Length: 278
Image (cartoon, rainbow, N blue to C red; front, side, top):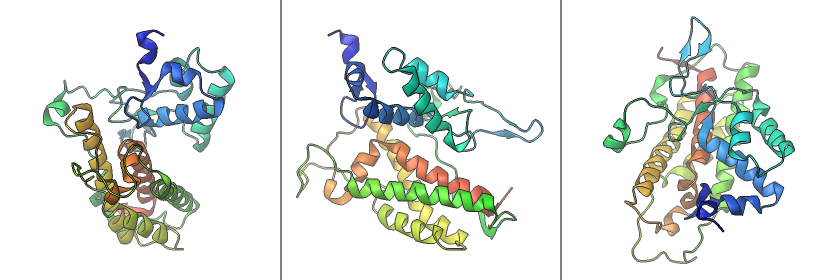
């Protein structure tokens, strides 16, 4: 087997990732899950962070793009999966009506144009601030659009809660962590915050100030997971963590896209439901 075939092909949270050869041997259902995971690790809805030009009524893709799910998946998985599987994955990815995609800030597709300033600073780009939103409802609060955004946010939060409950790290004892451990920052309040978001978003009229309150620990976890990823890439931290305190958060730190998707869904709801400073 060649050296190239053993290189990590997809980051899956494990120490070495999934190689191209291992991916090729998987069942179509497993391949499908990893294809979706890879896409959302690298691309996002431009509504999340891409600037909007009010004059042209178009997004300005200053960090690269727009990207097509079909093009990117076909290129990444060429010769490994059938065209029908690519089409099936594309259909699911585009099921919410998004067809043009922007690169995520931590993706190799992201073009920041700043000659490595972020690497020098050692700090990843921060997610959108909650301070941008006032506690007052917008004119669209209670509209069908707001209810749809609320349902999507609730679904994302429940998916994240389920992940925290069920995922377990591999290779570490079940009862006590090793003596030489490091706690995961930013996760202590996360379970309680996700429960608070779930309860509030299920109410007929969620209070914006409470959603912002409970979304703050989620935002902190997004930031912490991004920093963890950078430190991991720089070999500044080890894979040994305090599993007794963090539980499923260990898995999430290796999959920051799940945290980011949940936070982005809350931001999308606030975009519709709340008045903003500007």
